Image (cartoon, rainbow, N blue to C red; front, side):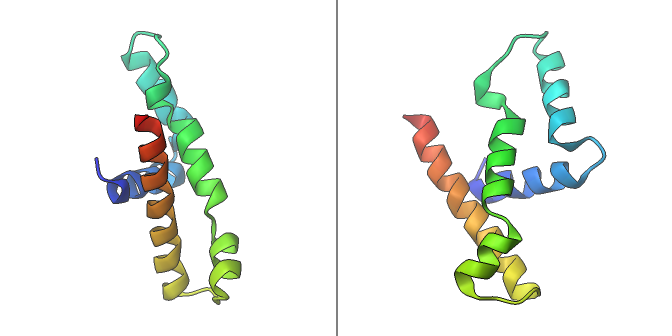
Length: 90
């Protein structure tokens, strides 16, 4: 999955009733209780969403809330995810 799709997915799940924690429970149950750090949505998702947040982007680019801030937020999260993917593949 491309980094942009991962970010979109994490953002949607995080905002849903299920949340990242709920998704992790579903994934773990689907695996029959076996843990797999490669699919730890809570850790990956929280690190991305909490590290690259609106406040971070607002300060980095000196932006006011609005459409441009939202676009920059998405770009920064995609960039973060690409870097994470490279590190995870090693």
